[in-house]
Image (cartoon, rainbow, N blue to C red; front, side, top):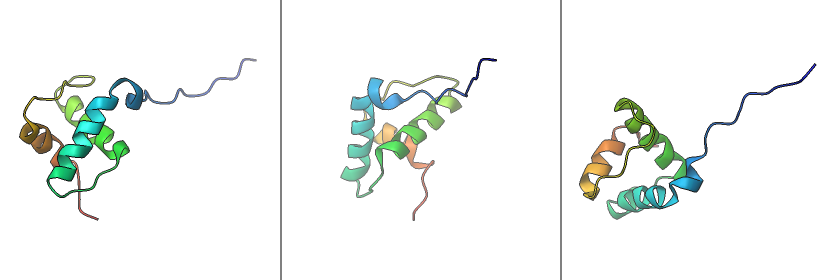
Length: 75
């Protein structure tokens, strides 16, 4: 019998590191602290809402912020 396990989800940290860093910086520039993991989750959710795998980040920071912000809550 061959044992199987569920594959770990795809790790965007490697391929999209510059996007993730940019999202974290965009939030920091506006006075918000978010983790790299939460930046990935927010952008994945936004991308999923557009029926895409990983959307390219808009050139305008305000659009990136607006598209991610609704996936966060204050702690």
